[in-house]
Length: 90
Figure (cartoon, rainbow, N blue to C red):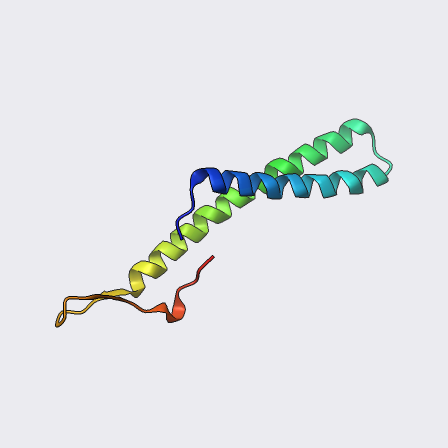
């Protein structure tokens, strides 16, 4: 499945903002200073976004190799066949 860069960025940003929101709620309950709460929340948002980008790259690399391994060319019929039994779709 090919995803556009815009879709991937929006999805990763949404995940990062949700993680940051939950961290903000938890940190506001704890007796910390406001600067510590804001700094930690921003770091959680940034780390969530970066983790999402890295995971997307790793998955596209793995899935690209998996699909290339599953595509075989039949020499007798000259047709391309794809074995769907072990292809992972996200």
